[in-house]
Length: 431
Ligand SMILES: *[C@@H]1O[C@H](CO)[C@@H](O)[C@H](O)[C@H]1NC(C)=O
Ligand SMILES: *[C@@H]1O[C@H](CO)[C@@H](O)[C@H](O)[C@H]1NC(C)=O
Ligand SMILES: *[C@@H]1O[C@H](CO)[C@@H](O)[C@H](O)[C@H]1NC(C)=O
Image (cartoon, rainbow, N blue to C red; front, top):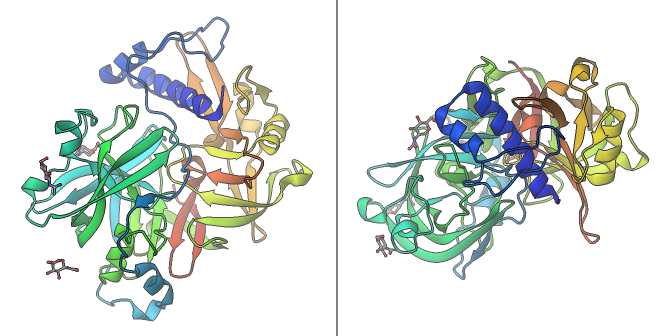
């Protein structure tokens, strides 16, 4: 079993458990599509799911590959050259309220077109394109399922054709379609003539169970053959006070305040203390260097744990790292390997309170993840189990392994992404 299927399985189990707890009829139907051998407690789905559950949208593979010739405007350069003082004084940071779906996905509203067509999108720091399903995907190709909202160019007076193809790989498959231009509105801010993707091919296991339609890319466009992202356009159109966005992510069903994406700055309501900053090590990703990974008792987990790179990826639910190190770490946590699922470890549910924090040391500062966030509790009808939400992945020989710190990391830290200063800031979340 490779990582994606392990991940799908983990998330399936999480959804099953959540559905069970919440007793939601629509989710219960989905639960019925999966059965597990509870006696042997083997994590093996029996039979094919009728309608697959939403997978863990774990990586982010390549940044968007646009198949295009035309030279776009170069916004990213301008972004880097501007200093804080250049930003419009009257522009204000804006909060976008996000909905938390089982700690697995956070989404919020945007509109596209005039009058605005409504979509819910999830916000992805690991990719740059913003796309929504196209009416043409359903009408002309029958490749966009009914449950999605669909953009219709005919009912927008601000639509402009572009027509170039785009495709974007995610762990759950490939999304493809063509580019169009229209006004994209988020939290009252309008990016005019914004290039976005109209998806005509969407893997049918995407976003199942949520009113989530597309993805809003908060990564980097490369400034050469890619159009500026929506965020870059809002900055260059003078609508935001700074090229910064920040996430506060709550824990599902915990009574914590609603999750919020702040565009144009940070919102002190959601964090305490100072920010620890990590400077970006590559031009086109939210990637930085970690000094080492360790457990809170100070024990280094293995010799090779120093000098790795990490990305903050809001489209990854859990934490993914190099296989050997993750194995060593999970073993130190007392984890037992789940048979047939490399990189997956079971933890003793009765010991959760005694588990140490996992610490990512950045610039000498410890960023810690508590067991509350890195353990997945799976409650079946006849059994329950705890899995480590730190998963191992093997990289190909010619690739450099890195850590992917996803939503379970971000819940503990208010995270600001600062494009102007090319850094990511972490402050303790005020829950
Ligand atoms: C977006 O999500 C919210 C919260 O789940 C929901 O109330 C709303 O109807 C959704 N909007 C669309 C356009 O699906
Ligand atoms: C606009 O949408 C209509 C209806 O789906 C489609 O037939 C037409 O080709 C679209 N226009 C462009 C330029 O893509
Ligand atoms: C968008 O396009 C319209 C029409 O071509 C133009 O009038 C307007 O100035 C453009 N807006 C921006 C912000 O580029």
